[in-house]
Every structure is written in structure tokens, then in C-alpha cells.
Length: 307
Image 1 (cartoon, one colour):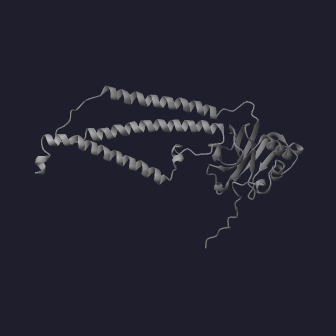
Image 2 (cartoon, helix red, strand yellow):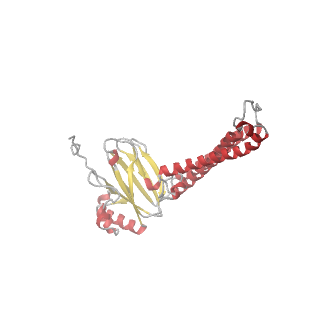
Image 3 (cartoon, rainbow, N blue to C red):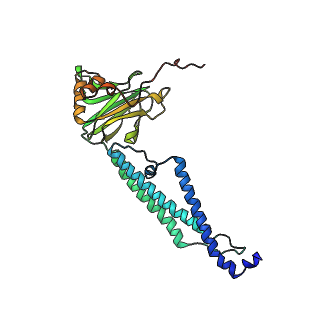
């Protein structure tokens, strides 16, 4: 009885209905999968549109790199949606309907041209913008407003302000120790060049909020990069290269201040003041005289013993 109802013309009339139902199921599964991925990653609606890019960039370079990331993510998403659509269309349109073998073709010139030209165009555009932005990010200005020499050592930092000398002609600097987190003070809206050098092994200078890091090499290698910080505030800095026992504790603080505060800070340092005293002269007080984004660490190897 059932076989008779679904045989002949009735089976053909029911075929479009089954196709629509199959397509609806596939779309439902795809939507459920996307919703599940979003919920499992714990992303908010706002986070989704960052496509994994960190928030909080405080430099002009970080904004340019963000634009590059978003453009690349959108291009990848467009290509992915197109390919997924072709896959689902083939699954629905060319699924098995019987034992008869469908028509076979040796080649499809339009599709082959599309698959050859489209990837080349996408790669060319991405390469062009990557080269342009990378060149801009790595550009070193001839006359920066501030130049800071960064010296990394196991396991801390020294920051020297080039051209600023204290008593006896000694360059103004801040050196970290096991009980003091060094505070690197920089002015906002000024071009700052960092010159990086290591005394022992390879380290890496990284402030997450500037969305940029650069290796610090020993020997005769001096790495450089330039930024312009646009927001005041304290930002934790880290060593991003595994450099030894206390690598994870090799932190510092980047303190971005107004140009007026920076001048007061440098003036106090040139007068022989310590970094906390110079920060007090710049208008800071209380706990803000020291690093607020990280704390010193215990270096005693026997501090934690097995029980």
C-alpha cells in the first residue's frame, strides 16, 4: 500500500518537498553549530566582531594592525561562506537518487578559472596591505621626541632616557631589582623610539596593550621600533621570550603620562631623584609611586619547599 502511494508520479511530486526539508535540516544544523561554537568560546556579541583580536590598543600602529586583521578575517569569512555554500548545494543537489550514474564531465572551464584566479587575487590584495602596514609599523622616524634605551638582563630591565643626564653626566635611568618593579615613564602623543639590547640571553619586550612585541638580543644586535601612545595610564610590560628560571616574573610597567607630567618627571630624575620621587614630582602619590599592574617576586629558591 505504502509502496504504491510513493511510486510513479507521486514519488516525483514528493521529491521537491524532500529536497526542501533536507535543505532546511542542513541549515538548521549549521545555525546550531555556529551558536554552539559562540557559546562554548564564551564570547559576547561585541567580541565576535573583533574576530579574536585583543581589545585595548593604545597606539596608532595597533589600530592599523587591527584594520588589517579585520580585513583579512572578513576576506577569509567571505571565501569560507562561498565554499560552504557550494558544499551544501552539492550535497542537496547531487545526492544519490538511484543506481543510475549521473553525467560525468572531464573539466569545467569557468569553475577552473574561478578557482585559479580568485585565490591569486585574494593573496595579492592581502600581500599588498601586509607589506604597506608592516613597512609603516617598522618605520623609524629621524627625529623622535623621546628615545629610550632598553637593556634586558636575567631577570629584569633597565630603562635609560637618551639625551637626559643627571648629576655627574650619568644618563637618567630606572633599574629593576628583585624587590622593585621598574616603571618606564613615557609621554602620550609623542613619537617614542625604543632601542633594545640584552646583556645575556634573548629576551622579548612586550606591552600587551600596544599589540606589538620585539625580541631583545645580546651581542652587537640592537633592535628598534617606534610608537606613539595615545592613552594615559599604567600598562604591564612583560618578557615574552623564555629566558630562564624567573622568566615569568620578568615584568615592568609602562606608565603613559601627559607631556607636562613627563617633563616634571625627567626634570626630577636629572636632579638625582629616584623614580618614585620623580613620579611624586609629576603629580602621583600613594601606591601610584610604584608599579600598580604587577608586583615584585620572591627570588629565594628555598622559599617553597616540598612537604
